[in-house]
Image (cartoon, rainbow, N blue to C red):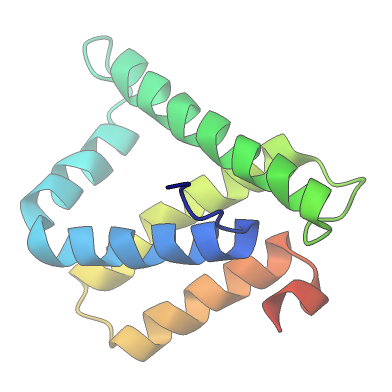
Length: 123
């Protein structure tokens, strides 16, 4: 049996849902992750940067898939868009940790997605 192919937009939305669920269930992990993101110390920063670069690389691959599908502009800088998507996770974490209502977080995620994919792709 073949695995079902997921499109770029579906993958990005799923990542967003999973991330918000993670923030709900692993609040203390999110706090540590945010602290590491601002701790430019020799013992933490290289590991944080390596983790971030791994996320950017995976997201970039998804966005390149989106270019092939036509839901990401063919001339888009997928690395920069991947960094935008990855960096938005810190804002989402701060919103979630501040107990902002889920609708506000969802609107923020949708706004980020609209900045990354074509309008037609959002259907």
